[in-house]
Figure 1 (spheres, rainbow, N blue to C red):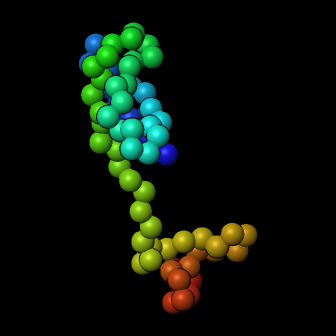
Figure 2 (cartoon, rainbow, N blue to C red):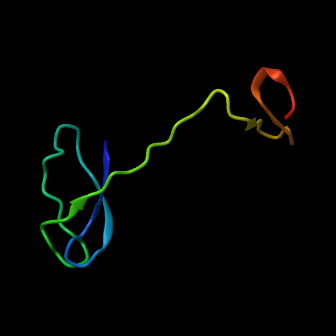
Length: 70
């Protein structure tokens, strides 16, 4: 279920709305002031890089994958 983030153009309140799949065109209403014209925000998405160092659970050290300790 997609989560959309909005900012109210009337009171500047930021809030999230869960939309059912295919229902993205539902109108969002600000829960703080009731304004029916909030602006949908662009949210950053999380990504995973295979080149980035990571810490193994409970290992106490970070590694850069198969190349060994950083």
